[in-house]
Image (cartoon, rainbow, N blue to C red; front, side, top):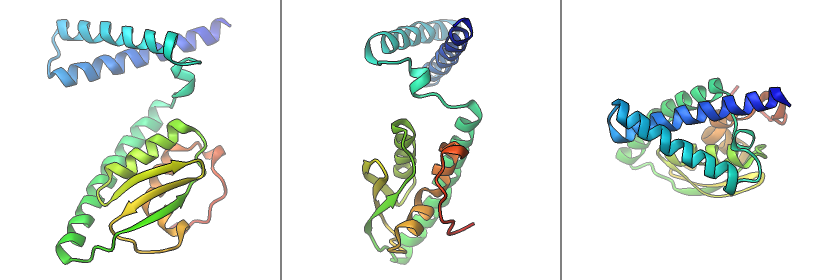
Length: 177
């Protein structure tokens, strides 16, 4: 019991630190006053969220390892850059072939599904328009294939591999291994 309370408090402190840092970045100030305000507002938001909005503590519902979070951000930034250059090439060359594709997914956790859907939308050339367990519906400016598995690998493959724990992945057919 004591060990789970310590882990819970550790998660709360990490979330508090991250929210405080985000507050400082948004305010473009790192003065002690700004950091104190950020910590106070973050504590209130986290307390209200845990106490009144969620059925379980957010650390259990939305937890992820710091390493996975850093990998997700790095992959996201790399894909935004790569897709941006590719989307510019498609636009300039006039080779846009817009289509709507259904992408199968093995993601079952709603939080992880939201992370992947947002990553798809943040990547130039794609917009997630719907998610149902087992499937994302995406508008794609380069409908290069009608095969759902190939399209899934091309659009969301890297995001899904970063988000999903290895032991929860279904055995997928690797198209571009």
